[in-house]
Length: 242
Image (tube, rainbow, N blue to C red):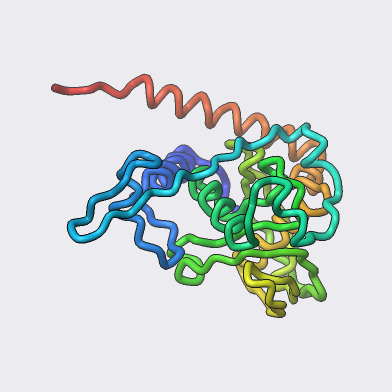
């Protein structure tokens, strides 16, 4: 059964999000950005015997859930469409998507969530899930799913503070191409399987609120309002001691 929302686990979830966004909880991708991240965008870094020019990151705002770009099926990805939005390669798009996912504190981010018309998403990066493995997924396909399903609470960057109990297959057999254009076939279990299914639905114009009844959605909205109210109450109660 899904975990019930309590003051304790809400506070823990919010703290976890803040830790991700502030860098206390790392999102791993094999790149050490410890020093570079502290510099201003575009400012040269003097590391003693070498000077590194910091590349300015591209930040895309999350579009609202009512935006048609989030509610329509995305056409198959083609590499020659990258230049239309200023991307030189799949790898550059994947890097920008990863940076945006990390900025917003998510475990997955679909291109159409930030207004990009690509059938592509990125997922992973949490150190406690597959040791921080990140997948760059282009033109995803789900070939098979398990008969056994699991009910868990899910969130979505497009719906801040909204959590819904979603029942999904325990494992999925998938196929996609990665940032190098190589075809990948694998079977995902547990959280990676859930993340893949969630992001893949964005590719087809669905959002996770489509998967629950009106009653469940109304209850979740009430819980969301209570959560926000509780957070504001706790924040207003903070005192700075000097």
